[in-house]
Image (tube, rainbow, N blue to C red):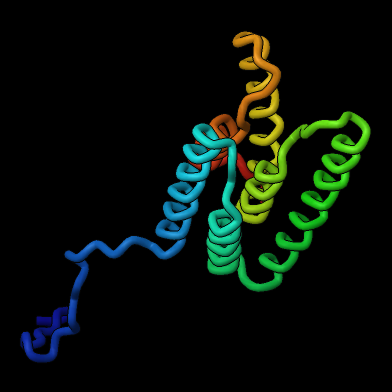
Length: 167
């Protein structure tokens, strides 16, 4: 019997391939999607994005990218998301000061942070696309404002599922 070796069942490695254990990255992505879906429902009903949920989304996004790409990329993405969200916050504060009312909303900026950390390109593109969809929906319903997260989350999930991401 050349090329074949017989090992007894006592010396065979413990093979658990019949038990499916999902990849940790998939679990974290699924957790992020679930948290964002909860946020979209809360935003649609009460126009709020609770801080505890925003922090949880951000932590899951950072953990997911850290496990996928490492510490350096995670730190760089957090820094880029912080800069982008700081810019949005500055414009929001200026808008509120000079227009006398809310514009984008701080919950939308908190949600954008988690998206920009996890998938920067998909986050920015889905944010822009959801703003366009929100504008069209406001025009069609003749309302002055609607919550953004119910538009943002599905677009982001579709973009991540299709694989729109450059980095």
